[in-house]
Image 1 (cartoon, rainbow over the protein chains, first blue to last red):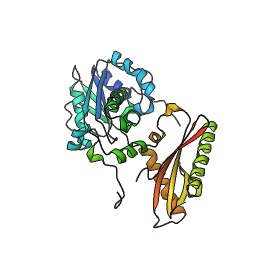
Image 2: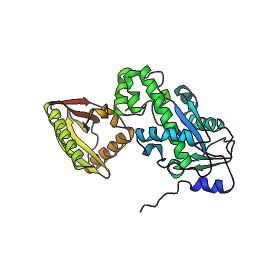
Image 3: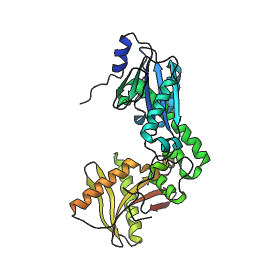
Image 4: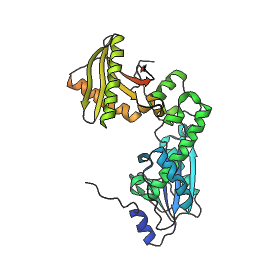
Length: 206
Length: 120
């Protein structure tokens, strides 16, 4: 059975308490073998809802590109944080993702009164917050943040494609596709590969 | 899946099977299904069991076909392969995962074969 989702469920509860600045935060690029992890935070005025905003993974690149300018236009404030591959290797991916999300939230002006976070938890978050598992499809604001993060990260990967054209970053965006694995095997890692993410290989071979 | 894309996929799988047979592979099974997953071809070569994912390209716009075999797809193929081994009670056998990209360029059929394309 399919029930219509109230994508403003979490937002409305906070807006009804009189809060003006409710933010959503999400990240893109935790899984890939190369490139940065990008977090985005965004806030909308109470009552705002843009149709077509959903979990970034459910939208096509074209649909994301179409809704992106609307998000920027109608939001109160947004902020992006980028943590590069080198830092991901130094911190580990969990810490790097958490840091990116904290930084994105800190970049919002005015300061948010409450933050809706995609995932299980955000350690060291200085603001009142609610972590929502699968928040990117349950909450409009988190969904908007997920689109923002995804669009920015894809753009970064297209830039890296021009610098390292042999890997196909424009197509797989650093994710572990067969094409990417084949290029890695042939060429070895480049400057933006996460060294701590070596694809697993069978013991005793290669 | 639409009937048209299914037909195209079957066409591609047949081309891939012919290609492998020309290389001396024996096709053991095609379209082995388990749960939500499917393995397009299972072949044998030099005593090794080869699980083959066939990608048939319908348009240039798809870009590099090998990019459509994502991590998620790789894991799915791995799960079905494991089911295949269990069903057929196969143990201690060397296995490998290959990907074959089939495309039609003008009148020509273009086949790209990537042996040992991924690991689990």
